[in-house]
Image (cartoon, rainbow, N blue to C red):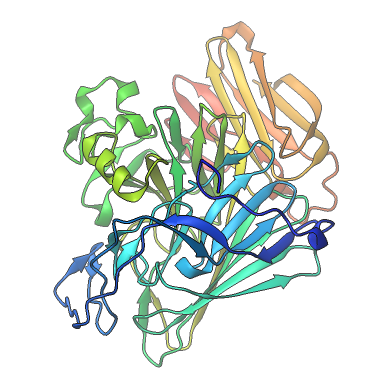
Length: 480
């Protein structure tokens, strides 16, 4: 075991020539074991949990965790291509425990080097880090229970690790398949939810992604997000700069840069905020110290939920950090929800109905917080003094891609660039007259003839109209 925690095993030799490899191999992780649940039934019928029912019967309720750390073997399924390394833990709900960018060694998902549960889950134990898949309520009743798993190899060379369960509350069937593709940095999660019962059932689905944070970590929502909401929309705030009271903090009395909710360092108390009214398909987080981060992409008509949660950058939050990890430090949760933009909203599954959808993540590097993204690329375009600062990160090799930046119809940059996940493109461009009256960015493949939906691949960023006003080709005018 490495000094930093557990070690990831090498790819087996017999899979060395595979563009995508998947295999099962246990890992030994420092662990604080859960203790046996109470032998007496716990009904908890009037308990309120995460804004909904906290009833657990007839499931056992665990209310104790050992304070003695041991080295414990955990069943693990590993998934790897040339760009991304994943580790899935079927024994803990099929969560993605490791998401690492192989091009720079950066853990774009929070890598938890110890299994240290706290009594946060509906049935007791819950751990932070990685990606937790929450359904049919939050936090997932089976978040600390095993799932069945299977590896599927597909004709296109992609490989999926399927995790499946009958959830312990209503016995509905839930499946999530974690997929990697050849020559792509995209991590796709395909979900199938099936109501096996003859009754209408309620459910929600939020993928709970953890990201390691510090003073230079920034979350980003699409630029059309100008206000955010608390749970049940019981409180609202302007965004990104909060100009009033939110969670008891008087952000309005602060300087704007100290009231910007995208920065973990500015939020002193446990805080949730969820994007309202966005018609964009992306959001994510960026580590400015490591110059790396990730983007989530999903159809906003199916997956409108974009949320950040933090324990807060203050002593109370630090206490929870110590409760959940030994040395890995604070994190934020960047959650992606389907069929709703708020928690704890529930949707319905009719008797024997199945719902299917997918969500995608991929690592980015060097470009800063993204201002526009789809499954193929993420871009940033900022104005700094008399310069435009441009960044482009892609999810697969794009030799000879064309990048065009124009102002008032005049091209400021028109360049062919060989792009790849390990080779982002950044540049500072002098602006005419030192200001941006009208600015537009276009990124296009050298040959898009094989791309079914050309617009989905051709990224056009927002147009800067001056005086703090932007306009997007497919979005309404908004303030940044």
